[in-house]
Length: 336
Length: 132
Image (cartoon, rainbow over all chains, first blue to last red; front, top):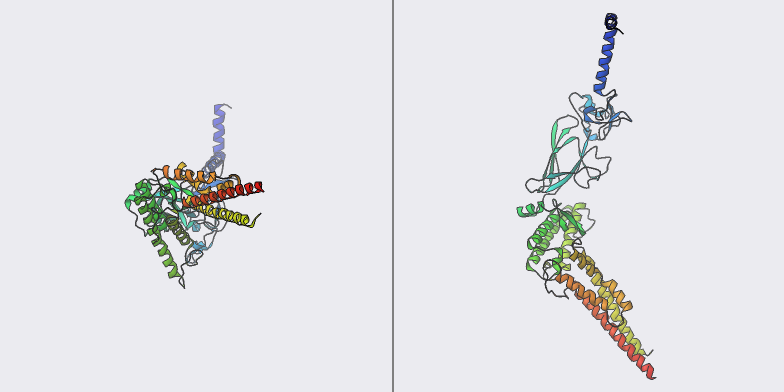
């Protein structure tokens, strides 16, 4: 086609309004490209969620979202987010209370794992700067109900970079964006490392922070009871074992040293452990007595102690028995 | 078999049974002691093995050894060496200390006495039978 002919043809199109229509059509396609409706190679869509091409839905961790309908495909599993004062919260399928301009729900729901972390999850080590001890934490996008595990439910999105850990109080702090209101909030997961009533010196904390061998052996409990040890002690009985390990480290002892002849320093380490474990045991039993309608002193299966307390009690008794009866005289704990 | 000989055989068997009970106790305690040892350390692994081998070696001695209970005595010596002369601070320690020495020693001694007495009795019985 000659140049003049093309120019004339465009003029003809302009006059008839056809060119304007074509321009609008092209512009619309470009907009569609930007919004992902057409020809999109980006797997992450609305608020940064992963797009499932097979179902054409956005995956929000806990639920799938249909951006065409503007609705989730499953109801919100968190019934706690229902507020009678806000009727929109009663609709379990809407996104961000039907107000996506004001509120954002980037991950649907979050679940924090501090114990028994599923292997599929990526673990984040949160360090206590004062002691150097770390706690393993995993944050999963999703609800805690379906997994039937020990995750702690957070009604919003947890900022993983905001996690803080206090190894002495056992508190894991976190900041999050509330799912319902979009406002920033904070919370604490307790008993990550239950508050220690046993006195642990800063020297022991500093030494423990450098230990990189996980507790191992035929009998272990917590992070320190057994040979080796690393991380934050899970409770008082475990902390006493950590102090015991530090005592052995200072004397250059190993577990086998107990069977190599009497040693006063070694006996002192063992005696300190036994004394501490006896106090811990007594404290747990006292707590059980306080909870129980009638006094009790037996181990195992008490409905008045938590399973963690039961395990701590048994571990304390096992350590006392080992260092009292199975270690040769001279290194063994005194009976009383 | 004369009644007196039967009674003596019974006493040997009783000694053997007592030795078996004692060595069983030694092995059970050895297993419990091993629970606290660091099996990643070669010396403590060896120590643990010597702590739990009492009963198996007792049965081997019972079955195979004629007069001297070699197995138990060797185990006793090896355990003593590993326990005292291995590890961080080798020293000459008491080989018959409770609970990881005395039971094995008693068991070995009882089985040894039982074997020697039985051997002696068999010799006497055989020689008397020869003169008859």
